Image 1 (cartoon, rainbow, N blue to C red):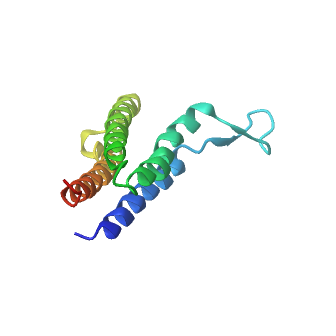
Image 2 (cartoon, rainbow, N blue to C red):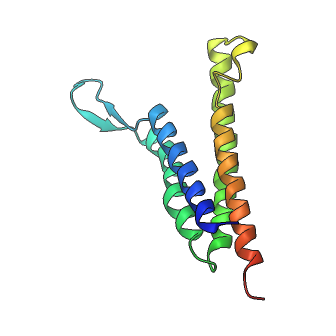
Image 3 (cartoon, rainbow, N blue to C red):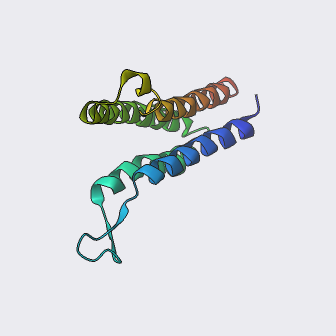
Length: 136
């Protein structure tokens, strides 16, 4: 298996997830009193921070054989946190807006959760490849 291609896939999935996440959770928002002035919404910034960690830290940890295990662990933790948080907010949104069951998958974060699990699985394959080729 080509480790460079796997690393590129890991980075592209994380970067794409981060951009999709930012589109929904823009942390620079217009001020309520002066709409032409933008202020930082710290809650939305925290929502942006986890995907940013995925792009920078996880990808960086996967670059070295000595740190790949930490990249794998952090990647898994981010996916679990992301799944729980996105799932929670989807359920809350579905209940608050009384979205019909036929639209639950499309109007939820299930596709986003799928992207994060694909990112994790690419990381798992990259981790397995690194460990298989490690000197014993």
